[in-house]
Length: 368
Ligand SMILES: [Zn+2]
Image 1 (cartoon, rainbow, N blue to C red):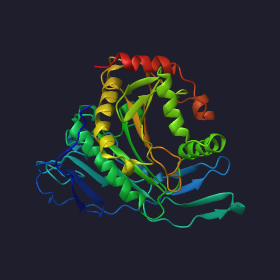
Image 2 (cartoon, rainbow, N blue to C red; image 1 turned 90 degrees about the vertical axis):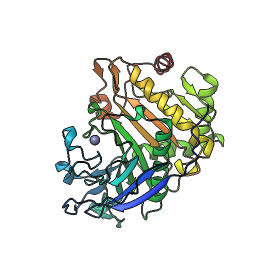
Image 3 (tube, helix red, strand yellow; image 1 turned 135 degrees about the vertical axis):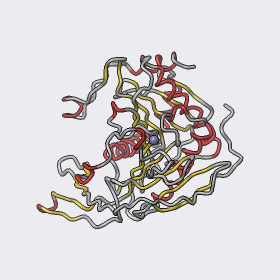
């Protein structure tokens, strides 16, 4: 694959919004100086969320009751992620931008870490919802989607995710940085503008904690890395491979939970985005854009709703956890969505209506 090696450096401009939240522009090539000022009269938000440890499962839960007032599916002319133009002020003061990242005005997690407290003899561990939540705008074009981006723009988004991972990981008390995108009203997206989010958690998320435990068991039993073995097994088997490049392979996992679920993993294992090398970074946009476009071709219904989730190693787990992206849709047929009902929501036990092998075959068939 030719890759997306870029000759021009990424220019990063850090500025602040009217309520002191940080806004960062990422530009490549010709871009106007990012000097526009946020003229809105904004009051600082008092987040006040809480994290609580479920004493029965050991899973962390964030209680963020203050977010009920957040912007919900505004009309396009009031989109807070479009550039500020024609006297209308949005979250992004510039008249145009390439990629922009800013602190969420309604964060689930915000602020520096504070020691946890315990009640009921230590059963109830809780603390302030420390951490940081950011919004990543992929393009100024309100009607586009990630799949419409050029490889060069997708690469700029990758560079922005990488920069945020490095910076947020370095904040005191941050354990895990999670970059993700929800696409489609079916997923519960409250803003149509193409964007993703980043959560910097003060704890290791439940799914990552389970993976870390499995990786430790695998290491103890075999002396090898779990993710290396999983990728090697999929590549040797072949039935569930969706597409492969020189540096990344996309496959439907053996025990996929979702109707269409693809994991995209680099061949050389790295703990997080900051550890990718240039050949890996150059190839990623081509494979990822192709995957997204195949998702959109699956059902003949236009844009397929999806969740795209970067799994990155938390602090202290960098030796065993492997960076990979998990992309999945809740759509299982043109007129059917997969709902998390009694079995999944009640017991966290998934029932998948499509075999992973059929899903992989279908995702190969819809190649351009
Ligand atoms: Zn917009």
